[in-house]
Amino acid sequence: MDLSIVIVSWNVLEKLRSNLRALFKSQGAFKFEVIVIDNNSQDGSASMVKKEFPQVVLIENSENLGFSKANNQGIKIAQGRYILLLNPDMQVYSDTLDTTLFFVQENQNITVVGCKLENERGDIVKQVRRFPKFIDQLLIVLKVPHIFPAVLNNYLCAGFNYEVSAKVDSVRGAFFLINKDNFQKISGNEKPFLDERYFIWFEEVDFCREVYKLGGEVWYFSGAKCLDYVGASFSQVKLSKKQKYVSDSMLKYFKKWGKNWEYIILKIVWKLVRIFV
Image 1 (cartoon, rainbow, N blue to C red):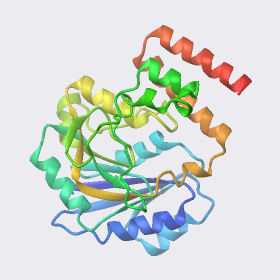
Image 2: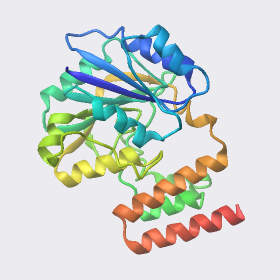
Image 3: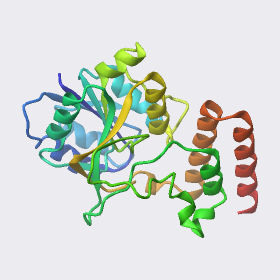
Image 4: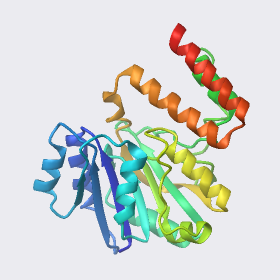
């Protein structure tokens, strides 16, 4: 098996249907499997997959396990040499998979690669980020970028050229292709599991940082593109709950990768923000 595509879905039936239809129209001389993990959707998503896409391997969870844990369920049974973590609100083009696979096969030093993402209007979804630093995340918590957006230019790679492939710190987890053989070579681990401490948010950044710690590389590839509906699942979550997910994941990231004082200050500031904002 060349490629295993792992999709974690939560209450986005129509987007998931479009995603799967597009996947099975892919062209190229490669074999792939699709694994859908349904995180206890209440919109009939699992039934739709069973009825319309019997070739898909379906895992039905009785609760929402979050992004990392559910993806790991799919990774655990994946048979492909390459593993693509693909959001349900994505839609590949007929050559997206074939072109991306060719790129990573020609560059075996790459551990993770993301392709060009475009929204419904054809605008590029800016996804390349530098690894989070204490100051830029503190500014985000304090909502300073709402008034002075330029303070995040460095973190958001404001001058990045999305028409040129390049080695980067991290790419968005919406289209996240992992070279399993390369990961095994640099880590000694059979499968590239995500850190399950993260429910959602920061998990792909954490994985990219692990890759660099182990001596691997993360790349943005401009030669293939994918339609990104940007956060169809997450948009269903209430603002207060979104904020909790972001704060919890940010704190876990800094507890793992940052200095102890950075974690403590961020934790205090998050508590103050919840009280006064």
